[in-house]
Length: 303
Image (cartoon, rainbow, N blue to C red; front, side, top):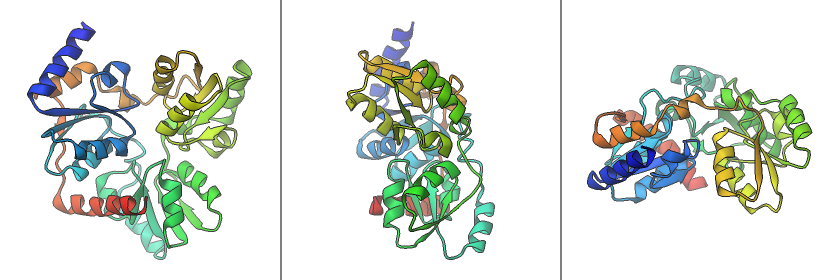
């Protein structure tokens, strides 16, 4: 039945001129029918380069919004309308305006994991892979980094010459991981290297052999001569690496590192999106589109 559903999706996306994007936290059966897989912003760039008239984003809402910003003339569908991002929704525009008024001489740097509306009051956007480079290149030595205090802290430690103001936002999934989790995993797998996402707390990142974006973690594991790895990010990455690198062993840092929003999209959801019977078309107000695009364009210029 799985293969039948996948075959129907492949048939429909060709008939209906659809490009399917799948974030790497999606399940293997969804990754198999996607045109492109990877991190959110890289997927948005890929979508802007194809000629398809419709794009289905198998991910969460802010990712679909970014696709729409980079491809305003395309029809962009969020594969499951309930798929949000708690971190992206932690701070609203009124709160950030108030904070900006308290720190008027600070450049506001927005992690890509923010709503399009919030991006309109920020100076530049960053991804986890570009954040360090862009924060170094910003002329202003004062940086208000939102919303993730953990990613912001990780960057700030590597650029001590700049002043960072961090707020109380985080990814609830990554923020649950602790030094105690590292101790337990290391006791079970003493020879394994620890690879973590910088959305983890400082106490976890400080113990890692490598900290970086999801794509960075996967590339490190692929290219390393090491044979065992503890993975400190969403547990789907453990499964994907196990399937791809069968000569190596991968273990989750915690069995609880699961993003339920990412897991809300099913293969049948994608099928029904291709039929035009499910999903949500992303429509952005012109002012939000223009403001968020300015923020993303500055990221492209700097990084």
